[in-house]
Length: 256
Image (cartoon, rainbow, N blue to C red; front, side):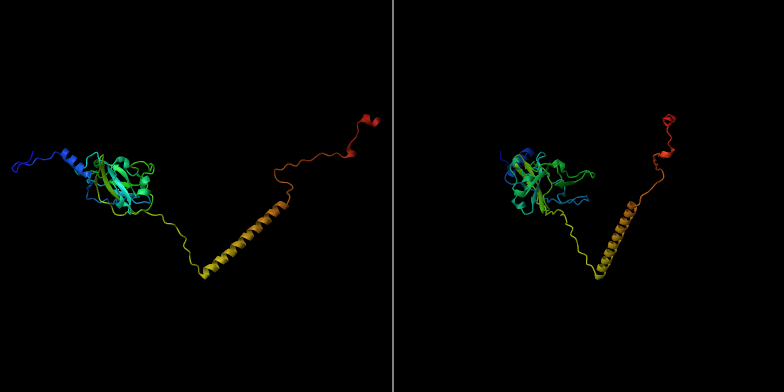
């Protein structure tokens, strides 16, 4: 039925509009004018050697082309490989952290738009910590494994459906992680006076050690060379002895 010039326009039903948008989404994902940002909240460990923290993209996925059931992924990529990113057309083709060294990107932190509303309670934490799961397997889809190096990294949000990519945000700016600093011994310059003092102290220490050693040898020799005859609490055992002139034979023996 064609609309006449004087006839009022008919509104397209939301379901039909969603189907049309989905067909268009199969050609190219819808662009969302949003750039992921690092968290500005004062948090301990907001940026570490293997993790970084993002602000939640609240209220950014209210487009008609996105349904409540569509998964929203976070794409993590090396800054030198983000231009090579190709959105997967099937769930089975979703890159995992184990593919990061070869592809340079992977998908993680799957959510839906119900988790990113326009407003949230003040007491609820509004951040996403990338690389925070140390227990998941890097080969598992959606694993939020620790990042393998200092970066730099770029991220963006990608909305998927069973038909393929639906919408995507802008890429973030480069994010560099903290790096461990090696402690190097700094040579301390020594003056001539310091060298003399160190030499004198060394000589005095040597003399002290020799004196203590001599005193120890003398004490040991003096203790081991002397014999104690008796002491308190010692018992002396003596054997009885009878002289021959004090011994008298019995009378029977004398008369025989």
